[in-house]
Length: 185
Image (cartoon, rainbow, N blue to C red):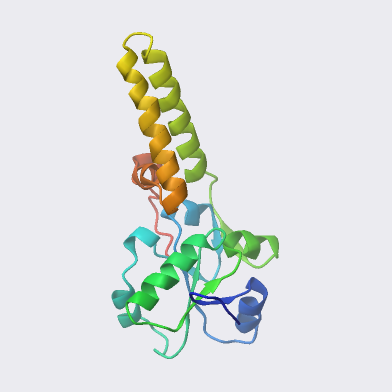
């Protein structure tokens, strides 16, 4: 394992080696249920980042409290946020999986695949683009409606600076992004 500045990390290869050696690995995928349904490591369970409750997770673990909890997301960013949330709650035995599910899948490690859905990132781009076009188009009717485009632009700048996306969080809760069947493992 490598020690990052904020939390320990592990490569997909190192984690898979632990699995192959028969070690019990508690892997939590912190992506949205929709993303998890599309593709996930066979050993992962899904608890999305916005529903993460470190105290509850640690209290309900089937493994020893000393065993690490591994967190994984798409590429590593949300996993780092999840690890930071665990650390802030006083749990230091949390390890982020470098490269996330993308790296796990690219390495050829076992995954489960569901139906492919338009990614949340693409949905945000589509929605933002449509709102900008709408603002520009409606500004010919009323010049003040260009404010719609300005609002979206400000939101995108805020999302880039803070690495959080309000539109993405809102879109994740839409009915078409809900996974109806259970995908906890």
